[in-house]
Length: 191
Image (cartoon, rainbow, N blue to C red):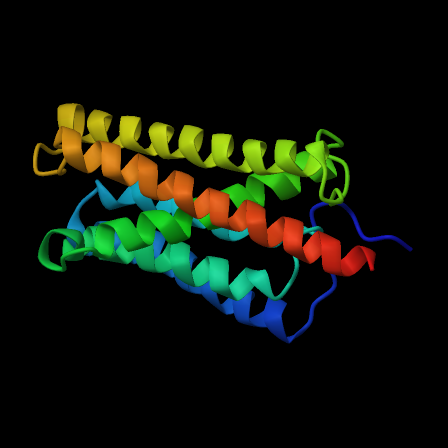
């Protein structure tokens, strides 16, 4: 029997990802108690990303790596490490851009919007373009959420223009890197 689109069989990678999902759920419950209610929407997004990593078509080996990036991103924000550690913000946006593009491409493939892993061709360039566009678009949405948080929730949320632009660019580069990896993996699998 084929597993549903939202569930894959459990292996050691998936179990490691499940541990991170449990940590994410605990974070979503405990972080607001210690750091205030502003942690609630942040960890809601982290838990959503962790849940999507459990999709059947997401390779199980990508589950714990992607989960670690998303969980770390949430905690780095809550602990204000982005302001204290130079370059951490861009590194996390790059990694998260790759994770989010990977999830978006997987969901698009599952829904039939993107078919398979194309060979090096125009279709491959289109897939890479879709990956970059998703990374940039989702990075932009994230920055809009930061702006909304700064405007209506907590003015301490850091949103200078240069930071916003470099964050979006880093997410786009991470998505481009993920698109290249997906093309390379697709080429290897087709041989």
